[in-house]
Length: 374
Image (cartoon, rainbow, N blue to C red; front, side):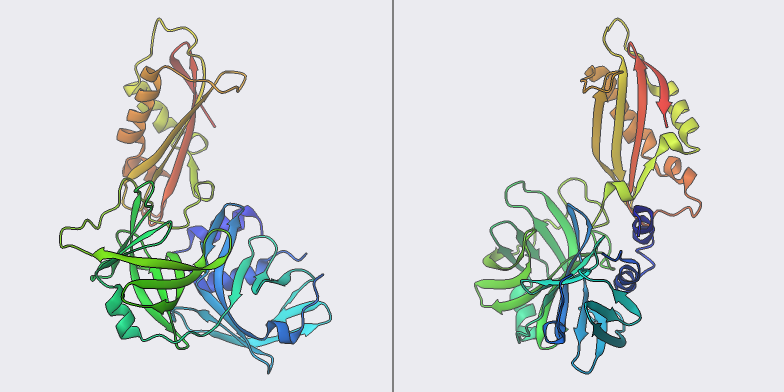
């Protein structure tokens, strides 16, 4: 599977279930030898994440149950899709799932983490059932603020949840619910500030709950750990349930997978006209020659953010341009380039269900715009 194939899957995420995406990756993972036994693989494995890139790990809401009778079940941990049943086997140093034969070292097991695939692999952990009462757990979570060493959870009674970094104070809004898996409970956080549909943020298995403390099993960006949350306070009626600053609609947003380089599209002419109309050349300022690369993101509701400008001279060495130039480019990007009408010129469907990353590069000669690069 190449980068284009992954990008295609991500663009269709609203129409493909996470279960279908898991099956897609199973069928197209590259073949790459750790010899595994049936005893090692038999059991239930719940998804941890899919590795889309070296620094981009997206929650994996699927599970796989490998039974001793050579049948397996692949489904959604939260029960949101019908499970798929098929057979599995080990032939020498190869593992077969359904009709897919995984070459040596393509299926590996280390520290109770099952890794399937080599490029964009799926990672599962061995599941241990931990019984919890759903009614009591929901009552304990709802309307309270919980804090770990790196995260604050504001669990609103209406099903919304605010996730806040206690250091940066950055906050995003999602939806939360509890899902029964076996006799265990999973805390499902998904959606964005506008909708609870799909788009998982994280999936944690709750391991224990008391009036003052919550423990959950999940990924901490380095390993599967048990995270402890302490009860901080009750939510007050006036507590805000809005994000701080810009929030993308996609929880696993990767700029490079959804980027529109306007300089390489039919909208290049429109952009050129906008710049000619609104940009005012900076005169009597020497040394204002080179390239400025502009990037920003427009989310599913047309909100804009994540603006970055990077400059270089004509030899592509880093360069800082006069604020009169960069401020103008930012203003034009915010007020014109980021408008829905402008971006939809290259969108035949007329809809924008997902986030879009926009980029373009301009060339300057002594403060005057001379070209838009492809």
